[in-house]
Image (cartoon, rainbow over all chains, first blue to last red; front, side, top):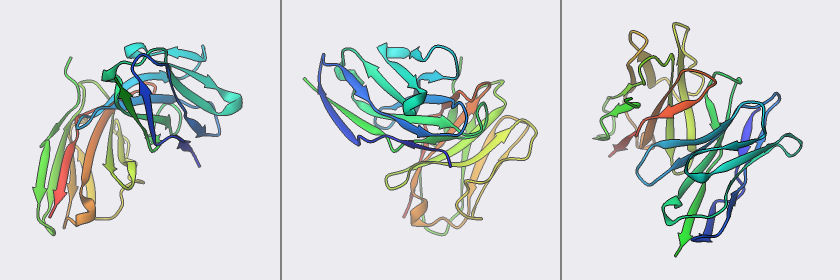
Length: 114
Length: 112
């Protein structure tokens, strides 16, 4: 069965430091992969997505993610974190490829130290 | 353009009452999804509508939960005889292609 694992429940980084949030997936075929961000009391905002092609994808707010098939990973990165990046981040895989529901990881809560 | 909207934003109800939650998807999106977000369970899929096809109800937790989508647009999620464990944030999403789902702000349901 498809699944998504985000090993880190909570991460704290200093403002200006680099960030990497880990995501591992289990999926039989080429996955459709997504990262979403959720600020407190808000809905989910799409940061970036991977369907095919270039394995390094750029998203909004300066985020990028790299798809590594050999490691079944889709880690999210940002070179310099801003205080406004404090939020919860969810990795997801699309069940059934281009349609069907998303399967989400449990999320990683990011705190930013001044 | 307008995003996905949901109403009400908050709903407080008493155990045993029925509730209806509404979702207005992005215009032109053929797919609509309902998810539930709770502290213990994370984000769970509930139901999925794609065009005129029969909905995928595989995520509904019990027969107290049902949903319909009228005219291929607005959707209503109904929970009958609410229980305290139904307390959660109910999120709606819509999609047009490649499963890129856009989410609404959610409805926070509290069952007393």
